[in-house]
Image (cartoon, rainbow, N blue to C red; front, side):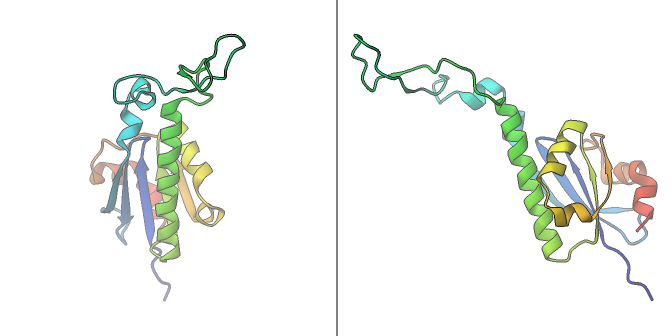
Length: 162
C-alpha cells in the first residue's frame, strides 16, 4: 500500500504568508502557520528615515579648504535598491528558511506555492535546490485575502494530485 503524500501550500505576498497542509483528500486546507512582514507594507520613505523623519547620514569626506573633517551630511545618491524591494527579499528568504525547516523535518513531500508574479520569483530564487525539487506547482496569483476553502477551490486539480 502506497503512503499518502504530504502536501504543503504556501500562499503569500510580500508582507504576509499562510502555510497550509492539504488534507489527504486534497479538498481541504489546514492552517499550519502564519507569517507577517509589516516592513513590506511600510512606505519607502519610512524605511529609509530615522525616528525624526530624516534620511540616514554618513561621514562626508573633507573637502579642500572647508575643514569638514569627519562632518556628517546627507548622502548624495539614492540607494541602488528600492527599500521595499529589500524588505520583500528579506521576507522571501524568511519563507525559504521556513520551507527548508519543514523539508528537513520531513513535514511535506510536495509543495505548492502561490504568490503575485514578482514575489513568486523572489521566493523561487530564495529556496534551496532541495526545496525546489519538491515544488509540485506554482501559481502567479495573489490569494492571500481568501479563506482556506476558497484557496482549495482555486487550486483544485493541483491539490488532487496528492
